[in-house]
Image 1 (tube, rainbow, N blue to C red):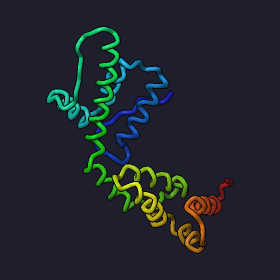
Image 2: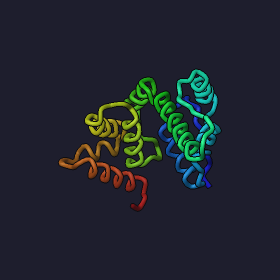
Image 3: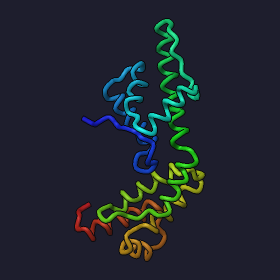
Image 4: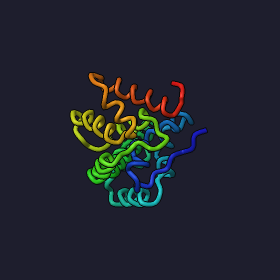
Length: 186
């Protein structure tokens, strides 16, 4: 059984708000959490800095929040709106220019980990690039440049000698080279 994720707002790379919501909403769906309980579950998952900032935003009415009693249809609509407003505020707060700058800086320093395959490294670069705030048109170029610059030197040298391959073929070739070097059957 997967555990419920938590979010503290401190590390936009290893604990991004987007990943947090992907995991949280998967849990909500998997456990059939009702609309009326989504916001409550969200609040229990916030920790330290993120929880304090969220509570301040509610107190300061930065997040539109409605708890007026009404008929059941209105209560359901309020629950949906309250959850969506909370989510929107958290996304805006924890994926703003400051967090995107941290991700852009991390992108420039990314290196393939010792036991990380080229494909896993490529996927990690794609994820960080997608959250970095760069324009979409620039992202593919940055992914390939960052990936090639951060690859293990033996693999980078090998794929550097090959010509006329598209990105998919280059990643697949790097993966095969890595599997061979690590004596893994693909």
